[in-house]
Length: 264
Image (cartoon, rainbow, N blue to C red; front, side):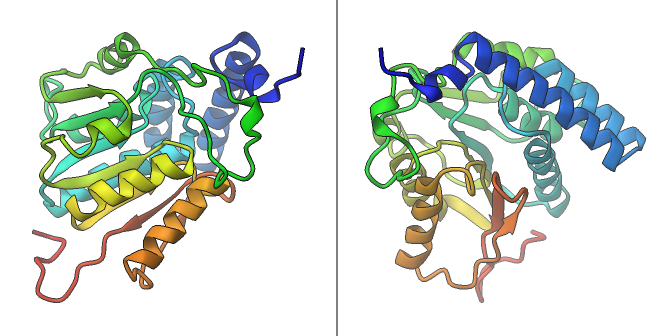
């Protein structure tokens, strides 16, 4: 039987779950050491509620999502929160929590759109050069809608304004009635998946809104999809902020001359 390192380490199986758990604990300890204050302790408590069962996203990337949602709220930007690549809903719940933190009933002010196949990752292509395509297996990183709902409930959040859209991106993104986006979180690993999200949803991100790329620096395909999109749309002035050297980046959609300012 051919050895498959990706399957061995995937969170769908025991060893992968143990790795995610240990990394979650290490992330929380590091966060508290780096920011030994009440806010860090509060955020660490949030992490204990959703990791590792509901998210594989690093604490630093989750902290970024949390703060960018708060930033668009403080700026008064219109638009929804959209996540493409949901798994079990932990990162989406963190964004919704940031949006709802001032509302005692746990309701969000923005609609939260969640797109995922809930069948696992699609096969990688030749553009995903650092992935051995022969090691692909059906159900890799397969999420579960029930778990997504549980993640929101764990944080005391209402599901009233949450729209879960199951299916492959090429069938679900274009028909979706998403009008304006304030925060777009792309956590979809491969070239084709990242590229289609940018192709469909970038134009709907409001000027001053944020696009977060969870897999930038991790997978070559994600990096190439972003670079190709920037090139195709002449986005040479994008200021890409790296969250961690090998995982995670984000940028703010530029506000062009004549467009409303980011402050609303």
